[in-house]
Image 1: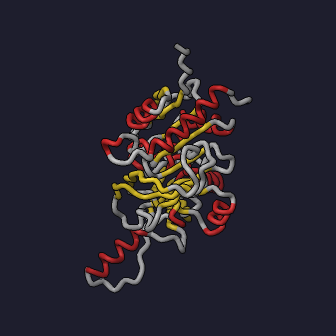
Image 2: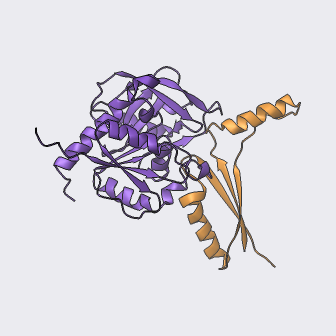
Image 3: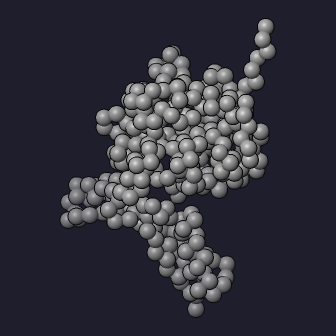
Amino acid sequence: MTQAEPKPRVAVVTFPGSNDDHDAALALEWLGAEAVSVWHADRELPDVDAVVLPGGFSYGDYLRAGALARFAPVMESVKGLAANGGLVLGICNGFQVLCEAGLLPGVLRPNHSLSFVCRDVPLTVERADTPFTARCTHGQRLTIPVKHGEGCFFADAELLAELEASGQVVLRYEGESPNGSVAGIAGVVNAEGNVMGLMPHPEHAIDPLTGSTDGALVLGSLVDAARRATAEPATV
Amino acid sequence: MRATVLVRPKPGILDPQGEAVLGSLQQLGFAVDAARVGRVLDLELRDGDSTQARAELERMCEQLLANPLIESYEIELVEEA
C-alpha cells in the first residue's frame, strides 16, 4: 500500500445567510479535498490551499447583493490570501461578494426579467487554462444550474473591452443569457488569474442523480490546483 | 446633523425595477414615459461641522452606500437650527 497523498485543504466560508456552504463542502470532499468550514466572524483563515465563498443571500442581500459581506472580518484574510496568489472561488453570492470587495471586476445586478431564475443553463468554456477550468477544454459546452435573482453581470464598455482583451471572461452563457449579463458573461477571473467568480453552481452538478456532473470539472480543477499548491507552497 | 443620501442608477444603465414600475403605472392609465428606481438613506450624524460631515458622507457613499460602477449619489445636509 502506498501512503495516501495528503488532501488539499479548501476553506468554505459561511456568512449569515449563506445556504450553499454545505453543498460546496460536500462537493469538495467528493472531489478529494478536505473542506474546512470557516465562520465569517473569524479574523484568521486556517492553513488552507484555497478558499470558496459559497452561494446564498449573505446579510439578506441588503443594500446590494454582496455589499455587506465584504466587510465581514474574515474577508481581510481572504484578501490577504488572494494578494499572495492564493486561490479564491466565489460561487453566485460569493461572486457578488468578490465583485463588491474589488477582488473581481464588474458588478452583479438584478436580473433583467426581475424574476428569480433556477434552471440548468448551457455554458461555453472560454478559458481552459485557469486553475478553475483546467479539467475543461477550450470551447467545451458545460451544463450547470443557475439559481439567482441578481446575476446580471455588468461592466461598462471600457471595462468590458479590457476584460475581453485580457481574456478574463472564463465562462459565457450559450445562447440567451438567463439574466441579461453583458456579453453573456457567466464567470470571470482577475487579471492575475487566481480569483474567479461564477453565477452557475458547480457544487449542484456533481452527482448524476441530479443531472449533469459538469460542475465537477470546475471544482475538480480547483482541487487539482489546490493539491499542487500543497505540494509547492507559494513563496510569500 | 442629519443627512439624506439619494442613490440612483446611472444614466444609461438599464433599470429593470424602473421598467417594471413604468409598465405598471402605464397599465393604471398614468401618462408616464420613464421611471427609475433608486434608494434614499436618512442618516443622523453624531456631530462635526458641515464640511467635515460632507467629506465623511462622500466616503460613506464611495465605500458602501453606492457602487460607483452603476450608481450615482447626491448628498443633502440638513443643519438643525
